[in-house]
Image (cartoon, rainbow, N blue to C red; front, side, top):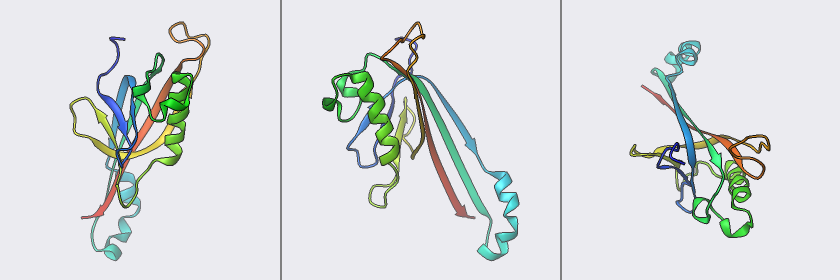
Length: 152
């Protein structure tokens, strides 16, 4: 497992739940949404300034195999930790998100500062023909997005 990235984890905004990922890659995409800005440039007079969009999307890809209880929330509810991790990740994608009391969820990636955002997409694949994983193990992709819009 030396081909994994250390320190990739996802924490719910209130700190009550956490996933520790076996991440094989993390991709970051940042956009200033210049096209959107150009399309709505006529609104500048109405809103009193330039509307600025900042969007950051991170994609974490990895494996769910040989999972331990400490790697995901509600682990005691499952007999199979790999299946439990996949099911809990699915649940989190539907239930987690920004709240007025606790703010955004947090993605930790190595020694970087925590990244605020929300889960925007989760994909999990069980592939019986994968020579490294096989049945009962999964590959996954998690998309985590932060969007900020303000008037400059």
